[in-house]
View: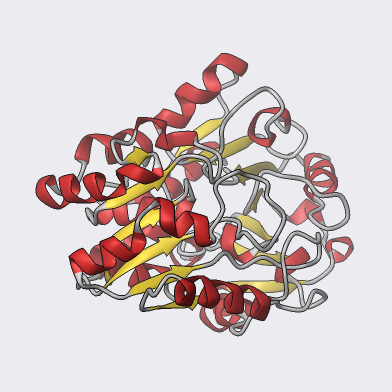
Length: 352
């Protein structure tokens, strides 16, 4: 039986591929290496330590679990799978692991970092033969975005495996869900951040009055190690103050042990161009994707991509017309029929 080493660095990145592990373990002997946020060395900045959830669910599928890359005999492995396509030196040491793996001709796979714009300097392009031999991407639309910068056939469209489970969830239309990237109380990498002005621009109070639904705000779980996030309680207090200032009935969550359940319970979703926003689109839940809050990536061809003032119109149109088959099949391989896990493993087997 061939052997594969899976390397995990950040929970919210790796969770997209975690569901391949059980099925993969029936065909390969798996080992695990945890680095950066997925190691125990970095404190978890939140209420729910998702690393504990991961180990509870998945440890049984690994023959060996490592906490130090220097303890690994890379000659044993036929392939290595990284949860990301980036290298962050000693923290996410994917270049150095790649170098060791290639001494023994292991095939190294990476995974698209997220819903990104693409240019010649992006990791998915500049890290070919430095971090990975092949990179799993969301769909053929990404291939079209990358094509102007490289002609190398290393990109494998496989959707988002964790989204396959959406097919098992009932849609219950309980609340208006807001998916944020950056908040107005932290550094502003993008101009459109969640705060009082954001709430006014999308007319959230008016939307709540119209649809008669409470609001749930999902904030991004950032660790503080790279000094890009606040202590999580500061963010929760800030979001609650924004809701209170605008007379909006709602709650805020940060860590969530079941994103699919969170999405399936939404009446509608308003978010920036986050990878998480593919989930409601796959389910056919009305989704307004706002310009200016993140990279545009594969949302550039989504009919619900809009300016803040158009949110109500976008939601109403999608309530009327439902699931967008054409968009889903274009951007998420296996996304319409919820079979990305099978697609992912099939492509993997072809390359090992």
